[in-house]
Image (tube, rainbow, N blue to C red; front, side):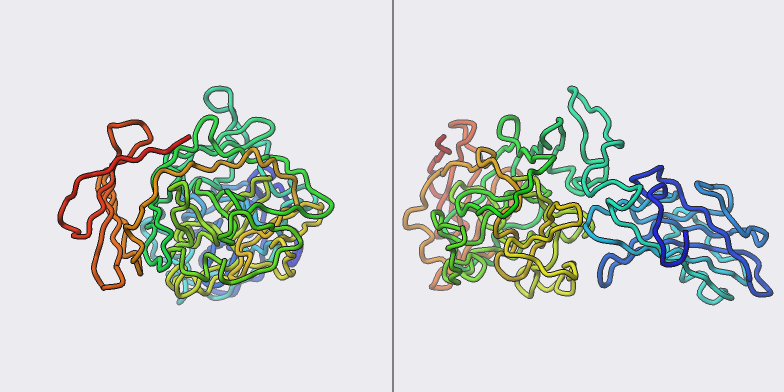
Amino acid sequence: MTNGGKLPATFTCDGQSLSPPLSWQGAPEGTVGYALAMHHIPGPGDTHWYWVVYDIPPTTLSVDAGATNFGTFGTNSVNDERVYAPPCSKGPGEKLYTITVYALSAVPNLPDPAAVDRDTLLAAIADITLASASMDVTYERGQAEGAAPGPVEEAIQPAAGGETDCDPQGVFAPYADLVHVSCDESYMYVETETGQPDHEMMWGITAWILRVPIPFRYTGERAWKIPRDPHWLEAHAAAHARGPIAMAVNGVPIYHFDKRPDVALDDSYVYDSKYDTAQQGELDHCGGHAGQGEDYHYHIAPVCLLDHHDLDQPIGYTLGGGKIFYGTGADDYFGEGQYNDINNLPAEPLDECNGLQLADGSYVYYTTHEPPYTIGCYHEEVDWALQIEPHQMRDLGQFGRNATEIISLTVDDEVRTLLFKTDRGELNAIVYQPSTAGPDCWDFQFRTNVDQPVAPETHCRVE
């Protein structure tokens, strides 16, 4: 390795996952030991670190590849373990990694290695650092010796039932309580018992379409089937306005933003803000709402996933297998201003599909704050038989038609309560829970007096 050069794939998850060899010289007089750290900055205000070592003896002027016996290891930010974590970015484009060696005038006061991360180390050595030297190296998935962006086949291990675990890089790890992922040679299968997120739903909606979110099992024959090897087109293909066009990594569907279910989304499409679900107040603070099948789904970037989402990982997959990365999408409403400073868009401009072509001819997509928000069209072939759209359960009738804002949706055991404000400033509620009438039936109470129970109505999904 040289400063400004490439990080060999051997030292990443595409290779042997070894820590790189290093050597240094020219430490100032008074050096009693060394420390080192390796980090990467994926975006503003965010830092990942892969290697933290201190208590390195002053006689040590080099370390071999994969060495573990030359100092005390702190934790990494990938899995919080006291080991070297090989870079494993799935995001497109070249990534910059910085390795720094620090010459110290004293032994740092760090009594608990398990609590030492990069920030802790830098704080402890701030006043005892005599000098430091850094080396910048870059790595891009698909560079020489590396693998193309996507699953690292060498890391795949058989799972129960003869299937294959195809998430070795942990794309779905933060959502393990919500989804189960497995593979065969053609598809990645994503199953979820509820089809719903673990963040709050529905609150803040000011143009309610009179639907409430009810769990739907995307399992078995109704599991998401995401092609593992997208078939890229020479041009692009239109998305559908009806039904899902993609899936977020928490298993929740993503729909197109246009509220008209039968509008043509081909090259004849003309944007009109009065049909934009985001502009018309139909979406909650997380970018989703309950649709006609009582299913919760997103119409824009799923911003509430950013609480625990790695920007180097896709935030969703198209039905054709394309990866969708978070670019922008948050504002003072969507995400409540928490993520306004995140801009993970590439330097290159996106095309009409919100896509970016990579050097190998494949495409990736980015979410944006402006239409089309997620994807506007496809660069890959899509089998529309893979769409999963739950059937409608019931119509609220006149109840709720004077709603001005949804205040909250709470879940207490299996009982759900949706509160909304009326145009007279009153609070009304819909209280609903699973019914004994059938496996996909729910009992509803439509309360004008929130605290006063009324006779329930039973409604079931119709296949």
